[in-house]
Length: 307
Ligand SMILES: [Mg+2]
Image (cartoon, rainbow, N blue to C red; front, top):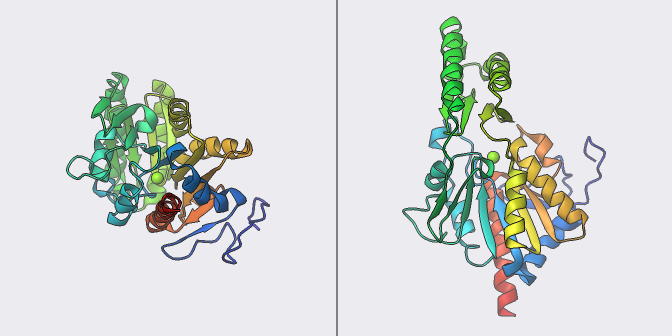
């Protein structure tokens, strides 16, 4: 039993939903999770499968500028491209960076992918080449400048803050403490500074693993997923994610399942973010486990089409 009191309904292993899934594999924890692959096999054209990128398709690395989708995860995504009705990534990254991470411009195989960046503020459709990127509001320049100043002051006063970074995403500015010498202390000191700055400048705050993000728009991944659902009208809905920023999209899927429709919240398990694992219908061992689950879905589509 989890500490939130939910009894897991695992049948294929004796793990409960708070334990890690099998190495490089996945485990279905709920009736919805156990039924979803078959539902996709029955109606691939009616399936909408959306996924986060960092920590879900790409391993978490110390330097966020070096993160990239793993070969295995890319292959698994390509195995679904053009076979499910809608294949999408929904990320907090700018769409330009997501295109590099998924490597859609130099390599083929993901020709139907819909890419939603900055929590849905930006969009790129690989198939049509259509790009929607709104101009960042002027206040973002001020946010970036003042956050960088605060970081520089903190590093000058305390060498243990060294390695803290400010990332400019255009319509968002991000404080990254993962590479700080003492990253917990850096987050404890600079996190409140970032939140106060957001309050003063009227920006939204998004928190994740060793990051505090100040956003020009309030949009969440839940809003992005709802818009895509309204556009594509799917019958089966899956969302893959690993971090707090994915929870609003997971809540959309939970509501969907609650209405008796097939779907699943697919979680890339992380020891750093056990709270997200508690919402899983399918729990995967990091990006490798997510790739293994996507392969399972592909296999079900192949099986159904050859029957
Ligand atoms: Mg993530």
